[in-house]
Amino acid sequence: MGVSRRNGANRGWTVVAAGLGLNLAMGVLFAWSLIGRALAEPVSGGGFGWSRTAATLPYTMAIACFALVMVPAGRWQDRFGPRRVATAGAALCGAGLLVAGLGRPDAPAAILLGFGVLSGAGIGLGYASATPAAVKWFGPERKGLITGIVVSGFGLAPVYLAPLTEFLLAGRGIAGAFRALGILFLAIGGISARFLVNPPAARMPVPASPLHPSAGGLPAEADGTWRQMIRTPRFASLYLQFVAAATAGLMIIGHAARIVAVQSSGTIPAGFLFVGWLALFNAGGRVVGGFLSDRLGRYRTTVAVFMAQAAVLFFFDRFTTGPGLGLGIALAGFNYGACLSLFPATASDRWGTKNLGANYGILFTAWGIGGVIGPLLAGRIADAAGSYGPAFRAAGTMMLVAALLAAGTRFPRPLRLKE
Image (cartoon, rainbow, N blue to C red; front, side):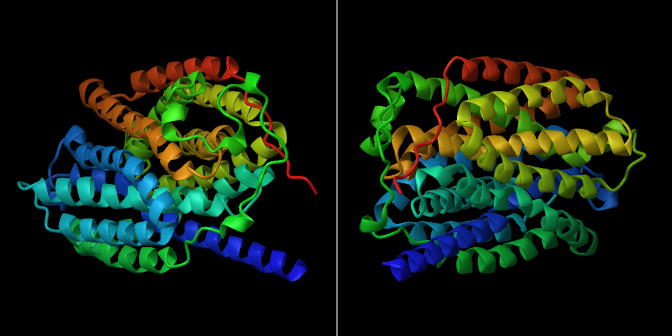
C-alpha cells in the first residue's frame, strides 16, 4: 500500500510538472505588451504604425477567444481526458503564431486571425486541461497550493519570454518573432501535453465530510454540474469578483511596457525588464496566494488581496521612477497572480472536482470579460488623455466593490482528509 501511494504521489507531481510546463508555453499571451509596443512604432522604425488601441486589439481578441473556448474545453477534458485536449491546444496555439507571422502593416487580418483567434483558442484548450488534471491527484488540503503551482507557469512565462521576444523583435522583426515563437511552442506544448492524465477513479480524493449547507453552493462531494453551479448566489458573486480582478490585472499586464515608457516620460527604455519583473511576482502570487488560502481560508485571503490591489491602483499613476514603477508593477502582479489561484481553488471547494473542468470553464468567462474591458479601457484612455491614471482609478474602484462582495460571502476553510 505504501509503495502504491508513493507511486501515485509521484505520478501526481509529474502531472503538476506537465501542467506547469504547458502553461509556461501558453503564457505567450502575456508577452503581448512588447509585441504591441512594436506594432505601435512607426514603419520607418521597424513597426507597423498602428495606434495603441489597434495594437491592443489582437491581444483583446485572444483573451476573448481564450475565455470562450474554456467553456467547451473544460467539458471536453472532463469527458475525453486532458491529454487530447491539451495536445490540440498546443498545436492550435503554435499554428496561430505562424499565421500571425504573415501579418503586414497594412494587412492586420493575419495577426487578428492567427494570434487573436487561433492562438487564443489554443491557449484556452491548454489552460482548461492543466489545472483540473493536477488538482484531481491531491486532497482538498492542497487544492490552493497545487492550483497555484500549475497556474504559476502562465504568469512566469514572461520571465523568459520578455527577453526572448525582445531579442527576436530586434533581430527578426515582428513577423519573424511570431514565426519563431510558433515553432517553439509547438514543441514545448506538445511534449508537456503528453504527461497530462487524470488519476484512476479509485484514487480520487474523497472529502471527510460535506460542507455545511449554510455556506452556500453544494457539498463538495456532490460534484455539482455547471447547471447547478450557475443557479447559486455564490456563483454570481464570484463571477463579478473575477471580472474586476481580471480587468485590473490585465490592464497592467497588457500595457506594462508602454506604461513604463509613458510614466517615466521615456527615460526608462528597457520596458521588457519590467515585463519580466511583473511576471516573477505574478507567478509568485499564484503560489503564495494558493498556499495562504489553504492555511488561512479562501475568504480572508481573497478580501486581503482585493483590498491590496485597490490600494496599488489608486496610487499607480504616481509611480514615475524606476524603483517606484518596479514596486507598483510587483505589487499589482502579485495580487493579480494570487487571484488566479484563488478562483479555481474556490470553485473546487464549492462544486467538487469531478466536473471542475466544465465548472471552472464557465466561471473563467469572467476573466475574458475583464480581459476585454481592461486593456481596451487603458488603451482608449491613454490615446485620449495621454495618461493611464483615470483607467487605474476606475479599476481600483472595481476592486473595492469586489472586496465588498467577497466580504459578504465568507469562504469556508477547505476540507481535510481523514488520516
